[in-house]
Length: 314
Image 1 (tube, rainbow, N blue to C red):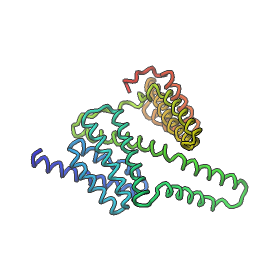
Image 2 (cartoon, rainbow, N blue to C red; image 1 turned 90 degrees about the vertical axis):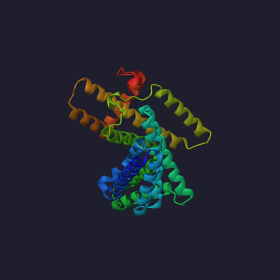
Image 3 (tube, rainbow, N blue to C red; image 1 turned 90 degrees about the horizontal axis):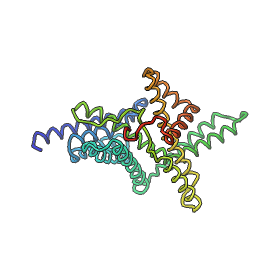
Image 4 (cartoon, rainbow, N blue to C red; image 1 turned 30 degrees about the vertical axis):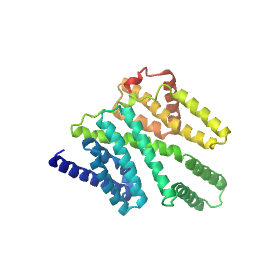
């Protein structure tokens, strides 16, 4: 790399770092733009693909310091970890032309690792237990709701429902973190691809959602996980109920997505309008009874391959 190329890489990395900071500012201070926080790793993934990791890490460090200055040191550490690890893993794999599914899996693992490392640093180094803080937030929300209920009929039942909801949400934190890691990896890959294609980089597309399919041995994997969860509970290794709830939550989402893919597949097959297809998927997501039907459809497709598609097509 000559001097001109080094200068170009440095300038471009600096610009991408600024974009990441803008995403952070928008996400933190504009409520309806909070989803911009998901996009923070994207500029660094692009930098890792277009240049080497040295310039990428410089950009990550600069952006993290700036973000920490207007938020908190812990947020800066989290941004540095999730951006640095994601850029290193996903950026390198994209640059090497690796399989899309492998990139998403690796990116999910990278996001999960960054989150766990942040929890560890906050708890054991900074003395801030993030899980305890989450519990305090949920508790304050429940107490706030209780203050409006008064002593009317049915109040005790509503309070019990609120307490149950709080306990369930706290129990599902592990699976929520895992699902969030997978979703962020998917979004980061998708958005990075849109930008990289405009720069002339040959980017592997994710493929049509209607062709999405879980591994064919997913049911066997589910059976093994349930068996291990039961055994771990009996041996008092973990809280069996909490583990089962988290496993159920993750697989419910997975089968729901596969069910939606099946529905989309047949709507495309019958050439239904795009607007109708999107509206139908939104309804299946928002209406609980429809979501259950879609998840059951996903389970059936995992067992008998309703669409008659080959796994290699996904």
